[in-house]
Image (cartoon, rainbow, N blue to C red; front, side, top):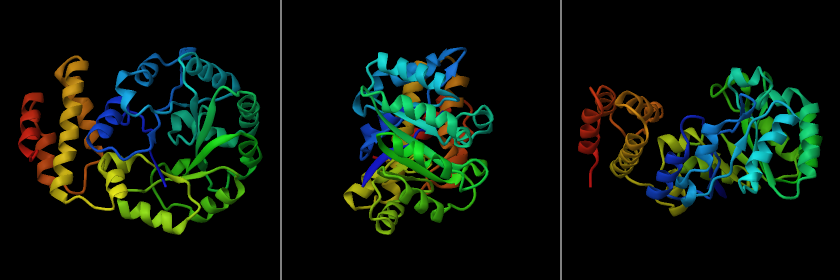
Length: 308
């Protein structure tokens, strides 16, 4: 069972991936938040993250998001020029701003675009490709016209989040459609979505013995020890999980404090990581952390709650 950190824009950037690996480990790999075309060129800010020295301890696979074959070619060329030999294709971003522009899950409604990209992937022997996708945009069966194009590509794997984009991260998972898609594809399959505990991974492994692995985003934010616990077969105590979790936040705080300008910017960035709090933190502690007056106050409270 392969265990991968999923790309989550604004969260699983190089600093998080680096410190998660340093403090917890357990992942077989990670994927970067998507690189897109911005002002007619690959986004420079994202390229800096992809090239960050912090990536040395986990060497992530860069992901790209595109609306047509031209954008795909431009982004792939930029990454190849920087020495990357693995690229992940985003066919699953559910955010309306990207979907409405035909990017991410929006490609699922445009088989002609995927067919054009598939032609280019088949001709590109210098790079290995993988795909991360949803089942559709407004229906869980919209993947069906894409099977031929997907199967025509020599993909390392296909990661599937078994929802359609308009649901974003809400509603039931469509297991039957996931199973039908997996049966139709000739590639190794990863499961992505609603994985938050070691037991969730074990249940998927038991249910789908053919499953190549899992890809976890929100679950690794709320439980960064998840993969290490699954690997060892031993669950950490709530106190130990909280202590390590707060060490991770402290490391992120130190990093962003040195890299960003101004306390407001640093505090705004670090607070985003509490969008997915661990289940082992007392809600009163969390409220006290988020009600800190400034960085010094926040840091003092964080240090106080970290136990040896």
